[in-house]
Image (cartoon, rainbow, N blue to C red; front, side, top):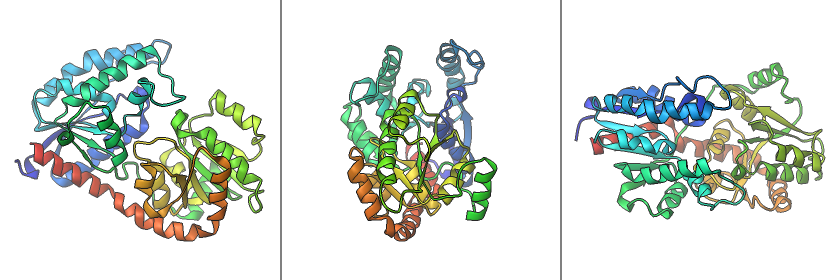
Length: 373
């Protein structure tokens, strides 16, 4: 085994035009923090050449950059390192170009693979996506070791019957997006500059339009809450992607246009301000690989009400109130019934968030690299 001071690790990140900001954040976090553990980092990701400009053919041009041009560069760089770390399981096909070096694959989730296999209701994957996910599934077993972001992800991966038990372990995610030292006054000022309505109490949701995020369910829960005493003036803010057609229709159907607002593609700093000023985060996700918004909210002192499903229960511990995300009426009952406990949830959440320190996560990866090198 090599000493930490001798370790040279190649990090393989995502293709920037694909706009997978969460995975790019994970990659950047490791680049910034590994040198502090005496690890020499060789950072690499497919360069946008053919897929640089947007348009109808951008996806196909991007495939040239990712799958034809990049592997040669990766093979050349891999010769110079002790360990190759593919930072996103969606890039598992790059394991074939690790040059025989020990390899680590971070598996954040296998939800797209399961969706392509028809295992996730409401998530339709087209023919090209099915072929891509089949390629990823076939490539995952090539990793020397697979680090799963949660116990739930590990169980999902083992359920695919493609890896050995001794090939995988749980390495819990930590905070890989920046945490800001932000007072409530500064947060309010930031939101006011952006004309985000924070002058009245609001409940927050953070997430994209993927079906498993259950944004439709959040709107239904919001409607139930808005009918209850004490919540008549509550506002509901949804931070993430712009509403798709289905969500717009659901908001209109339930008559929520006057009290529900979207915050489209906010910056990390704006998301932090939203957490700081929110009365609570309601996170009714149906599936997750980890559930980063839970611990982010807790770190900013925002009480969390979330789904009674793993990994939400795994990540949130005893610091959340859990409900059935498919039952908006009962969910609203759990939220209103525990609303007075928000101060306790803040205190417990702050303690729970400490389990996910960035330094702990990066240190665990360094230990893993050392065991393989």
